[in-house]
Image (cartoon, rainbow over all chains, first blue to last red; front, top):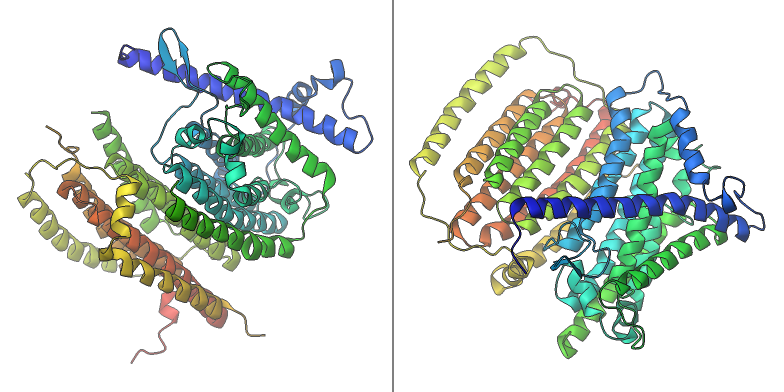
Amino acid sequence: MLPLLWWQALLGDTAKVFVIFNINMLTFVHMTWLERRVLAFMQFRLGPNRTGPLGFFQPYADAIKLFFKEETMPAEANRKAFVAAPLISIAAAFMAIAVIPYGPPFTLFGRQWQLQVADLGVGVLFIFAITALGVYGVVVAGWSANNKFTLLGSLRSSAQMFSYELALGLSWVGIIMLAGSFKIGDIVQRQAGSLRHWNIVSQPLAFLVYFVAATAEVARLPFDLPEGETELVAGFHTEYSSMSFGLMQIAEYINMITVSVLATDLFLGGWYSGLPFLPSHGLLGFVWFGAKVFFVLFVFVWLRGTLPRFRYDQLMHFGWKVLIPLAVLNIMVTAVMVTVFGA
Amino acid sequence: MIDAILFYVFAAVALGSALVVVGQRNPLYSAFALIVTLCSLSAIYGLLGSPFIAVLQVVVYAGAIMVLFLFVLMLLNVQPESQEEGSWRALAGTALALAVLLVLQVGTVLLHWHRPAPPEFDASTRKMAEILFSPRFLYVFEATSILILAALVGAVALAKKDP
Amino acid sequence: MPSGPPFLNHAVLLSLGLFGIGVLGVFLRRNVITLFMCVELMLNAVNLAFVAFSRAAGTLDGQVLVFFVMVVAAAEAAVGLAIVIAIHRHRDTLDVDAFNLMKW
């Protein structure tokens, strides 16, 4: 492997960013279609099936419609903050995907590549930090519209986000202890081998806590009180229309995809198939990775179609008094086991 | 080289937004400017080779404390300050006192401008954990956890409405 | 031979600048919450000095102290804002000049 010249490295990194960005955007676009179709089938109706075969072009039609809609802004709103809020949401959503590997390392043109923009030494902590910054998009959006309901909605939404963020972070500590490193690549590496090496097998409680906290963090049902149509109008994004609203939707779905990819990488074995007769080296790993991410996304949609919504006080009670103690319990048990038995 | 350019950029951003924090009359804009300062300081910590402290700065300061500030500002609905008469004299007096102090401090820094080359630096989280949980700092670590508990109880007790 | 970044001195100067701006803010601002934010600015300036000197010395003690400073600042922010809420409920203003009951 020859060392790269600076412009070759720059070109390679730009290509990586381009590919990862497109993977995320394409997944987002088709996720909207998939969600509407799957939800419809669960609710015994059909969903969009006219625009293109099986309604496949529905998201594109939605995007065109959103572009042509009028961009409104309330009269007394704070202009700069109103415009900046969706930008903050989207920036935070896309910054978090910089440290996640989207597939196995593979060799191309005689060099080793991995679909990961930045392999930070503090990988998982970086995601935690960016999730903390994502709260600001919500807070600024609700406050800048000069509307009591959006302000209340945004305060509730952000309170929900940073309450469940704690449980989210704590659920990772067990895995970090087992892997001995913050890098996501190392955590996935530890799950190579067979199914019993996967972190969901060695840390089932952490997986449950993570999944519930992630659902609340992304504000999906059953935790979507801020955006439920029957509550507080539409929560913090009431006053947004056209592409500003589109940007906030993109941010929300990208957050959901990020959380699913993290679930796959941290708990479900990443790009390893787990079964000895299914090889997973090189480009084949992408198949298993994609299948697992798709399955987790399907579970998110499934939850949305099945469960009723939490009330706000039930939500806060659950986050602080149930999830955080469970996560801490998991950390203590893991710490004892690691000390006694070794990783 | 790139490190130095990035450092000066972030230092300029930090100084600029710090001036906005102090000069802006609307406390909400001061809070936003403080968030920008904190994030640029986090970037500087990263450039100085401490990734753990950089991430901790974002998580604790910019991600939690400033959210708390924003909540209080929005719920108490604070109005922008009005300009007071005679405040220019206060400004001049304070600036003079500060200038004297800063000259002394900058002078001290300039005296020690040429320091020996720093030794090899490994600020990984593992190293930090080794020091943090060593007998030297372990007692302080446990004491801070009790401090946080006391702060939690105190904050709830102070802010509670009497029924 | 490994050497640190050439901007350590400038980092200390930046820390001094930020601290000075924070002190200016504490003297000049009348809103309690803005005062508080200037205090946080001073704490951050001190953190920057700690990190810079820790890098210059090559040990990690400075960074461990930064960790503790952050923890204490968080606790102080929580209690301080609770006090702000309590006094706002009492006086309905956030001007520091209004809280001079103990003045001679």
